Length: 87
Image 1 (spheres, rainbow, N blue to C red):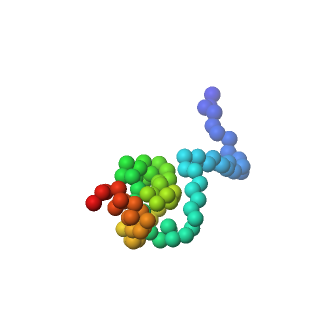
Image 2 (image 1 turned 135 degrees about the horizontal axis):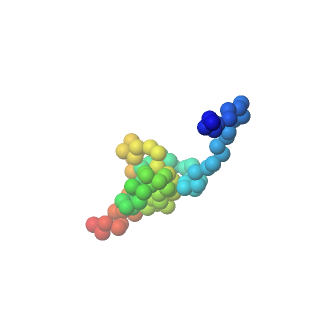
Image 3 (image 1 turned 60 degrees about the horizontal axis):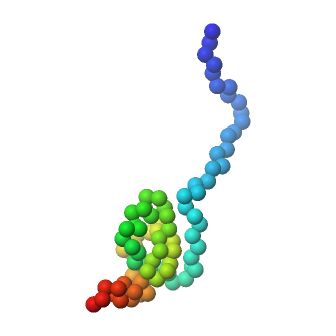
């Protein structure tokens, strides 16, 4: 007796699963996109691994995809950060 072999046909199987770990994040599309933002240090690694959105001190929410060192610091985040440091 021969072992059962898979039946091959010309049908195509389409995998339509979606990745539900990342919720769509909307931004205002304004100046926030031109700056690097301050976020809680403990939120950076989970965002990088899981693709979860970050929330900046200024309130911007996004999933980082660009190198923040290539952008100037958000003036609003910087002002908030400076006020928290308590110079």
